[in-house]
Length: 153
Image 1 (cartoon, helix red, strand yellow):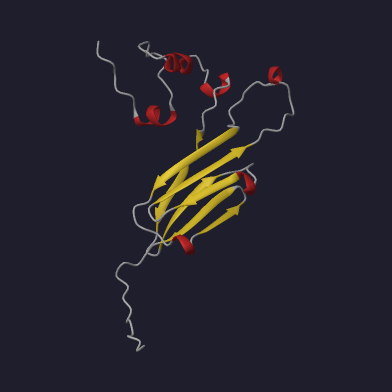
Image 2: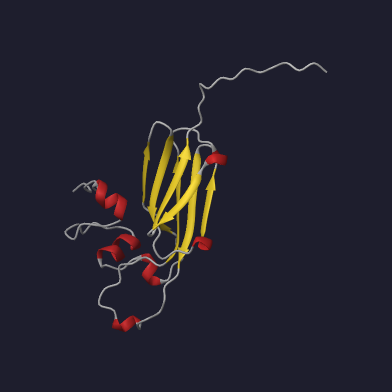
């Protein structure tokens, strides 16, 4: 029987169907048991979830970064690409055996976004409001013209 194609939700979250017993890789089998790579101590960056939209003047990126100190964030921008990296440190308040559920992500995360248009790097700004990171990236106006005056030397 042919392997059924994973749904968009399954591909983006890494989940598998419980009735799908055709998992080939070790990672897929562990995910089916509810064990994730980060629980086993593997050092993989988590992927930061983002919303990206545009207005007439700018591209806006929003990401939840609650629990991350500003000094633990690294935002790199080029005219057509942005990378957000950071680390969320866990405060040990309970022993591992005392947890009923552990769903929060702790550790390093990153996300690189290709921008649909070139932006003005120098005029870009990053704002944090109640755990929400808001990046405002003004678009470059490629149609803007100005007159250049000739100087006599």
